[in-house]
Amino acid sequence: MPEASSDLALITAAAREAGALAVRLRAEGLTSEFKAADGSPVTNADLAADALLKQRLSTARPDYGWLSEETADDPARLAKRRLFVVDPIDGTRAYMKDRPWWAVSIAVVEGKLPLAGVVFAPQLDETYTAVAGRGAHLNGGAIQASDRDEVEGCGMVGDARMFAHPAWRTPWPDMRIEARNSTAYRLCVIASGAFDATIALVAKFDWDLAAADLIAREAGAFVGDHQGRPFSYNGPKPAQPSLVCAAPRLAPLILERVSHIALPN
Image (cartoon, rainbow, N blue to C red; front, side):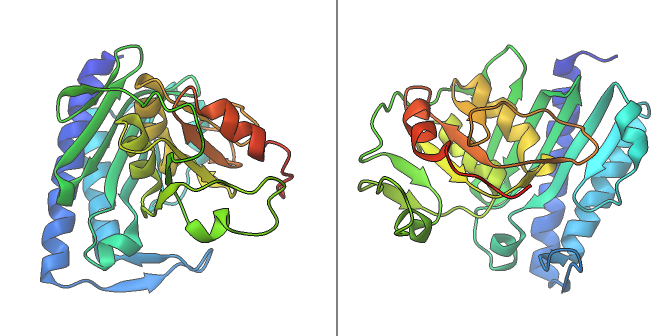
């Protein structure tokens, strides 16, 4: 097996190539449709970037499995020691509207955990990377999650309407709340310390999470579901029940507010 650093170099180069392709195709004019499964949009650029990544990565590592949002799932991945987990364009709605909060996300997963990960946001020229046990980086410089230890006044990535809903057992205090379309990018801005937390009380797919999960954890952040459980990847159903990512001192305070919630299976 190649070293994780070699895998990181491979997936980083591929992510940057796919990002450049997506930027070019949008400038040329997109075609799009809605997926029958969930009604989410998919463009010709999502599919083209996926095809490029599959060709580049599978040629370089033919013994690795493959899991991507835009490729039909092949159960053969379950028997692979390592696999690529890919979202060619995470945040397609932002991408279609020429907003910068979309990214190419690629992880190498081994033993149910990400070993190397890259999240590349082309319009922001931000490349987040990590290798397990070696810290997290943004454009080559080390990054660290914030030391925030109070919910009040924290930087929360999410939908302000959710936090204002009257059904919360304990109302949320005033926070700096901003939306970002890409789930992977949300975790990365927490890894960098630009924000302090994000919450999603709906299922998220492995391709939304795997690369950014590693990046955020290597930056010292907590990443897991709303009951505090860490994620395990490459299962038969490639999804996680919910998401909490937060600065390490803030995470227990977030989990205290959400861990009682019962979500549908």
